[in-house]
Every structure is written in C-alpha cells, then in structure tokens.
Amino acid sequence: MSKYPILVFEGIEASGKSTSLKKTIKYLKTKKIKYVSFREPGGTNLSEKLRSLMLNKKSALSNKTDLFLLMASRSENVDKILKKNYKKKVILIDRFIDSTLAYQHYGMKLDKDLILKMNNFLLGNIRPNFTFLSIVNKNNMLNRLKFRKNKNKYDNFDYNFYNKVQKGFLKIANKNKSKYLILDTNKDNLKIIENKLINKIDKIINK
Image (cartoon, rainbow, N blue to C red):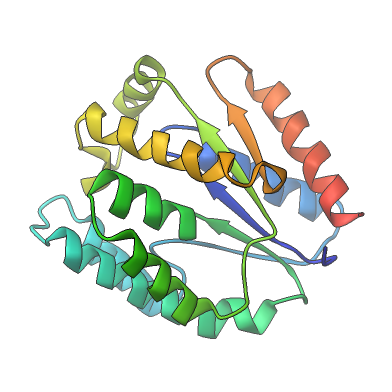
C-alpha cells in the first residue's frame, strides 16, 4: 500500500462519519503527514456550487439529475484534486464511490451498472485504499439530527430510506472486508472509536 493512501469516510447522516474524518486530520497534523481533504458532493469551487444545487432543501431535482450532478462534481475532483495529489499526499474523502451506490442505487433504485460504469470512466485505475464505515441505529440517528442546525435535503428523508442506504453500505463493505473498518457508534464511545480509527490509520500508513 502507498505511504500516501486514499482513505474514505462513509456512513448515513449523523453516523459519526465527519467526526472520524476530523479526528484523522488532527492525527495527521500531529504526525506532520501531508494530506488533502475534500467532501462529496463538493470539493473544487465548481463542485461546491453543484453541491448547493443538489442539497438545497427546496430542490425539486429528480434522482437522475442528482446522480449526474454528483458525477460532474466527482469529475472535477478527480482531475483537479485526486490526480494532482495521488501518491504525494494522504487523500481523505468525506463520501465517495460507496455513497453513490448506497444512496443512488440501494436508496433510490437507480441502475447499479450505470453508476459503476460512470465511476470506472471517471476514475480509471484510481481506487480508495481503505474505507471507514460509520453505522448508527434509528434512535441515535434521529436524536443527533435534532441538534443539527443547518439541515439539507438529504437530512430530511424518512428513516426507511436511510435504513436501505445503511444496509447498502454494509453489503458493499462485507464483500471486501479487508479494506473496510466498521465503526459502530451505537455501542462504542468516541474515545474507543478514535482509538480504533487511529490504530488502523497508523498501520496503513506505516505498513
């Protein structure tokens, strides 16, 4: 594995995904390890504008339109962030390929093969080295969302949708267990999760 891997943080809303990313950034800064971080949708200036279109609470865009906007955002990120920093810095991504499959296919029932073909076209041989998947149960998710100040369109689906998406994430992870660490934010406190996260990252980078 490269000294500068691509590490992805996945999970449904309020699963603790972004908290794990922040802990990773803090660790890399402490170790003075070069890194770059971006989110999807979002990333480049154009990608952030596309994110605003997708996530606007008043958005009436179709699921297909969301998919194409997401892929346009990813295309910009691949060309202007990923390829530029590949094997030169640790690349941290808040949502990536798995999110597209989990939300757009398992959640919204869009064609899986189409999504995979689009990703292959955009990414070529570049793939994540390791993925941290945060999971959360219904009660914890809904309680955490109550305290979220700035909610977007994706924070307002019914739980049945999120349940399908999370099951999709787990199905993806279970197909390639050696490249995933599942962080259960229901049973482990923040310190335990942080220790699991940092121990794994340390092993990946110093392998």
